[in-house]
Image (cartoon, rainbow, N blue to C red; front, side, top):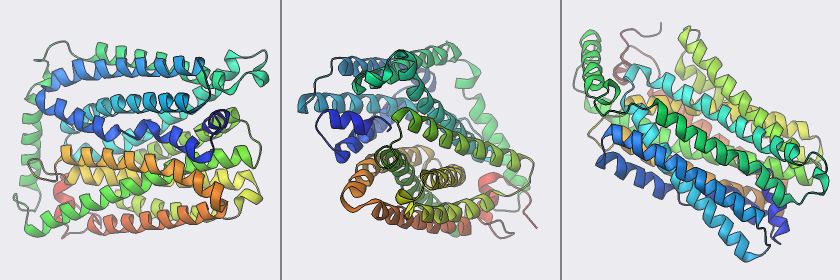
Length: 430
């Protein structure tokens, strides 16, 4: 995000092509998601974890190394641009396979009543990972060229920022391999977990004042909830990806900020989102507030924060940064809740299963991440910053409407059988 504009200009291109560089890793990610699903259904859970994820992460490290080598052999022009896009696409395909397998494994072994904490924790750790990535890519070039970083060509700075990433992928693959049982008969990969989940769910169903077989009304609410959650995934993906691409561009072009400084600021924004998610998770554990309240508050706040974008390019960069932090944190927090609702509402053996939801969610995430960077940067370049601000406001208002729809479907009440069944609750809020 922070170096794409300068690198694109070195090759003779503009903001639209820089947006394509950012989103290239998501171009073919849906293909990787479908490949991951094929591996999941054709392999045992142990083999899918022990072999596939380890192999995919190692291959991802190789792809990152190829990107590094390509940048070091920098040659401006269409050929370099095409090769760089191709390698970014390859890296995205490989990562999406590993992501699908890891996500599906986590969902399958998680009890229904723990779906919400799992979703919130995954969003929190995901934001901390983004923070670490932005910080690493910002600090690495400065450390690599301490004696004269101002005169170093941009493509070498980009190479320096990507180099540590390739090493980290290899370390992550090794850690996952060591932490994975070497035998398919290990308890984590056997049927013991599933049997315990079935017994637990049966006991909860027996104690809860709801029928064991979902009614037609409950089934319809499940489907409406999952469709609305899927829609919010696309809206959130577009919003956050547009923020990262647009803000980094305007800070560099209008305020003269260096890419290293922008990376640090964007990383801090991601960290704030992660910390807010963990605060919400802690509050939920302490029963300070209810999941639906988080959704009802964060989504409208995110939409209102978009108003800070209007005219911000002519006032102060801090208006943009404040809006970024509030909107990013709100969008991710609401998404953590919607993911938890959708995962809990899923029914295995139907169209609305965990595997199908994970597949569609990943594809829509990729669609939003592919479209947002080039659209946002091209809109700023062609129509101005306020046109982008209006677009962002419209998208966040749609997201708030979708969140309100989910809230009404999952609102706690004595008659909400869907809510009680999804989370195994025996009691409801007063």
